Length: 103
Image (cartoon, rainbow, N blue to C red):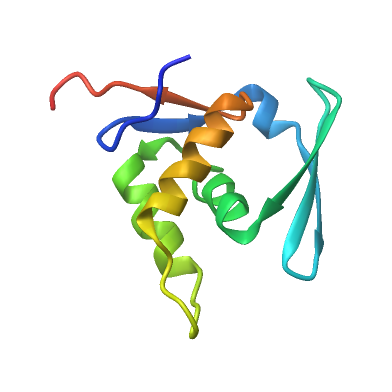
């Protein structure tokens, strides 16, 4: 498994396309049939999956998209929190990270 870096491309795996999710207040219950695991995701993590639902994107684009999608009047999203969520999704096998050929 490749560790996601800032300039990598990220995309959903086939396992991510099969997940079942339910929203409860400010968290999401995600069932991953391929591993028979259930996860609890926050809005940030769920928005990363939403961003990648139609196509792969650079990790920078995902971070920007998620930051703009989650409007918080109290706190600004920390880019490190988004990067950590991307890495965790990679560890769970829900996204893949690909090195860009022409950096």
